[in-house]
Image (tube, rainbow, N blue to C red; front, side, top):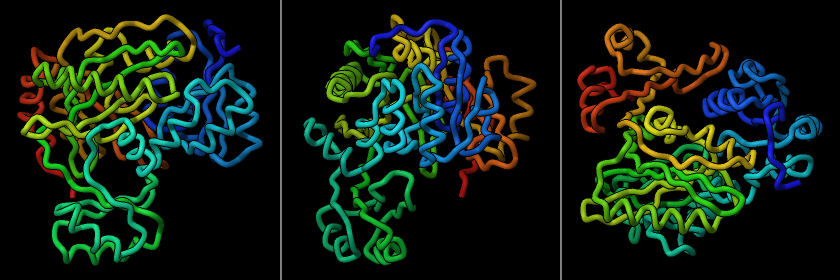
Length: 376
């Protein structure tokens, strides 16, 4: 049963309502699969575009069971879906990704322990349960440092640049356990996306460079411009990590590259994610089709770079500024998420920009001036 091949007409369940789900659903329909989507908001684009939608919370066991039993298999479209929910679904249907890796990546302490056991470089950190822990740990962590909740997506982060900033932590410190992590000065942030099938066969996408602004993903460039030694080391480390996790499908590992050439692992993302959107134009197979090929036990394509591409997120306040480019640019390709006004969403969509090189693309995007002003 676990090795069953899915053919067109089979039903794939998608749980979640982030933009990942929209494109995953589109890819499933192209392959001839029916889609049942599950999420808490019936107006979410993924649910609206599905063949069948099931509206429910991630703790509604009756609805989750009903959803699972109607699917040939289920995939989560975002690492924010609670691991406990995924574990529950696996009692009633196939869930090839499993819940174990998701549980690890959702917990910053578990994730760092996993990286340490794999002998990977990570930023120095300390576990924090009260304000005194911050004062004691900062002497070894150093400035600047960042206080993060162990559970991703829970509470806010606080950057500590000097001792007086520590007092700011008092407002949130009683909300749970945190980690205090050194902020590594880095030259570039790099990421490699991979797919792994049930036999452990790993396919690598080209290395990309990611740029964040105010902690939010802004731009991804493929291919990343780095020395071959750096690229080879990232591939070696990524293969080491992915071989150890039990999950299958698409995964992404991110790194900080310092000016001295040192690599520090930032995070592991299991499942399709926005760092891979760029491959919808840059590669011969996008991450959504590749992910579904793994789940359906289809042969995997070998990702190859076909053209330099940049992906830039489109925030809500950039809509009017984009109108000029809409009329002028023949190499700008848009993906809009079409969230209703009733739903708050960070990004309105993204644009894929093709060009002769990553640098040329970066310069063209910068020349528009659309993204010059950073969000406060």
